[in-house]
Length: 323
Image (cartoon, rainbow, N blue to C red; front, top):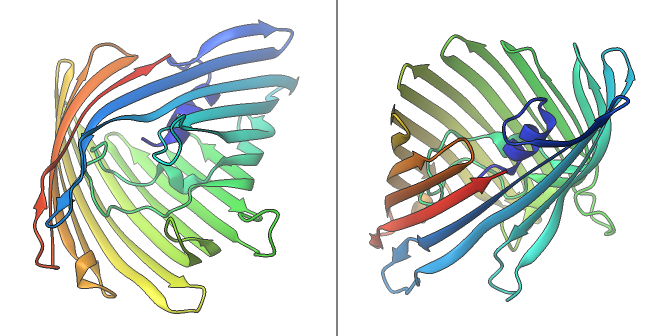
C-alpha cells in the first residue's frame, strides 16, 4: 500500500479518514491512521519452501497541523509513524516515515522540508496488494533530507522532490531527484513519473545508480476502471556494471458492483540483463468495502518466467481499517 496516500489524506482538508482534534485561532490539528493484517502465501519456486504466514502489512499513525499565517498561506507540520512486520525482529519495526514542516499556498501548492516520502511513492497502477510481481518501482521511496513541492488544481498536477543525502552520516553522497506531471479530464487521468538516483539502494543488499520512468493512463467509465502503464528501469552497481535493464508493461481492469470491486491485472517484464527476470504475472483481486473506513479483500496471483522453473500460485486474504 502506498503510504503517501494516507499522509495526503491527513494533509487534505475535510478528508473522511482524518479526525480534526483541534481547531482554534487559525491552528488546526488532524489525526489519521490505518491498520492492515494479511494471511499471505508468497510465490513458491520449484526447490523452495515458502510458508503461509499471518503478516502485519503495516500500522500507521499520521498527525498533521496547519497554522494560518496570512490570507491563503498556512504553515504545515507533519509527523508520521509506521509499524511494519520484520522477520529479523520478533517485536517488529517502528519507523518515522515523515517529520517535516513547510508552507501550503491556496493557489500555488505545497512545499515541505524534512523526512518524507518521495513523489514516486505514488507511482504504479496495480490493483493487487501482494501478488503483483516485478511491477514498476524503485527500492527506496522515502528520504531523510527531502524538499518536496506538490501542485494540483484538479485538472493539471505536478510534483517534484529532491533528497539531498539519502546516506546521511556516511561518506557516501547518495542523492535522488524525482517528479510527476499529470492531467485529468472527466474520467481520464494520464501522468508521467521520472526518477534518478546516485549511490542509492537498488536492492535490499546493494547500492548503485538508478534511472527510471513510468507512463500511466487510467480511465473511469461508470462502474468500470481501466489502466495501462509502460515503464523502464536501469540500474548500475557501484562498479558501474549494469545489473538491471528492465521494461515493464501493466494492464488493469476493474468493475465495481455495490460495495464489491473485482479486478484483473497483467504484468509483463523484459530484462536484458537476465532471462530469470523476464516474466509474466496475472492476478485477480476481490475487495469488499464495508464502509468508508473498513475493507476486506482476497487475491490470487500466477507467475511464470524464462528460467524454466515453475511457481506455485500466491494468495492473500486481508483486512484494512482506517480512522
